[in-house]
Length: 171
Image (tube, rainbow, N blue to C red):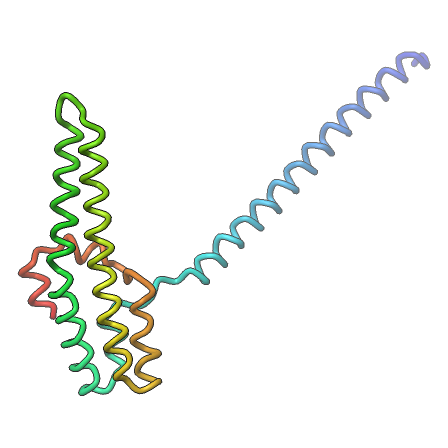
């Protein structure tokens, strides 16, 4: 074999070897970074666990305290209901107004603002009543009930979709 041919063959072999090594290194880096990303997502899920449902939270309370808390929360919900109904009504009207022709942006914005304000009033009433209720509880019971301030429990959306009759039978 001539030295020129040998140099060409060795050059091609070197290029193929470098290409294979680059491919292997890229695959390894991709696999490792993918693994780290998956681990981060799993860790995030562990730390972002949704709070237990209201029923699960209250189950750990003494029966008498549980009755008092349920009664207080029910009364707070009934007191806030008109605000939440007004919020839903204003939002439904905003959707209808947005579909109308001609489009009246000012009207839709006003209705959405009304909806947000009514929802904020309802939330403030619920939270204020919950805080007043918590003032009457012992520290350990208050720690349990305080988790309600974290927001919607697991599956809350499903409960909202359940027919009213089914929700009553679950209580």
